[in-house]
Image 1 (spheres, helix red, strand yellow):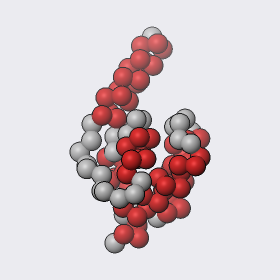
Image 2 (tube, helix red, strand yellow):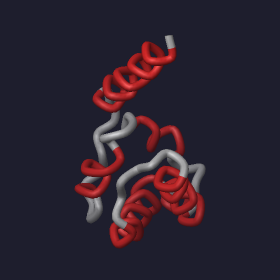
Image 3 (cartoon, helix red, strand yellow):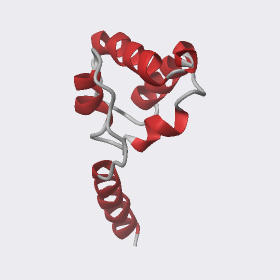
Image 4 (cartoon, one colour):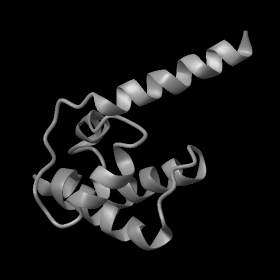
Length: 94
């Protein structure tokens, strides 16, 4: 039974990661988002937090993805991801 649940969640995550209804804004860092973020979850997650998170909030979110969720994001690419998210979808863009 536990193996079935693990498989179910694993396949659900893959299916979810491929379903996106948003088109990312063209800006430096977009490739990082496409490479690292969408491998684990839908890009709709970004839109759900757009206008809510400031730069510190996006950084906290990215670091949580690494520390808690195990996202394989190299530390040197975190600033580029955070900058893209903040400038394209952050609280200050309004």
